[in-house]
Length: 93
Image (tube, rainbow, N blue to C red):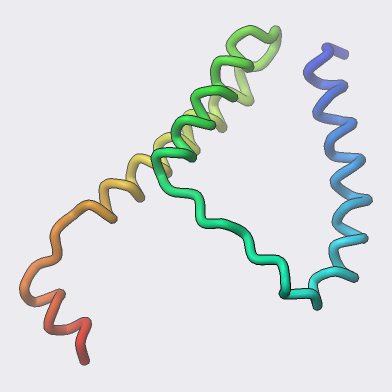
């Protein structure tokens, strides 16, 4: 088992414990998460990609990173796309 696999296994074990604790705290809506913009998400993803490229046996994870990068790129382009006049008037109804 590689170091990366051990880290992921440890993370998923901790995640299961955190998920059970999250059920209790879901009723508390007082904590608001800040909105992450597309640029920050893309920059953070590049840091993760750099980390994974330095690891052995991270080919499968890099595929997921590439898929996330593609998703972020598409969504950021859709946000920047100008609305057509028909879309604008249909949105108001």
